[in-house]
Image 1: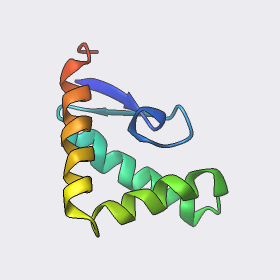
Image 2: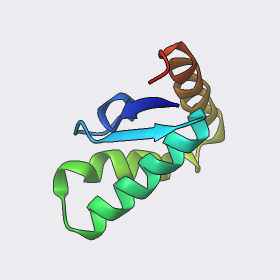
Image 3: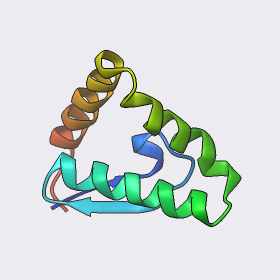
Image 4: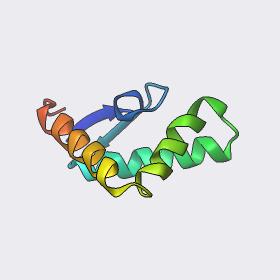
Length: 78
């Protein structure tokens, strides 16, 4: 299990996401950003907008995804 924060994934806060894989923490970040947006947290809005835009631009989105996976792999286990 490894941990990445919202900030490490492009967000504004230190909320910790835990997972066995990079996909686990990326999906947790997506849920976190959706929840914060729904709660009206404007600090998370730019990161949420960026996350939504990644899927409209597959090449740059894939670059972000590969980078996040690489950074996750480099982390020590919890």
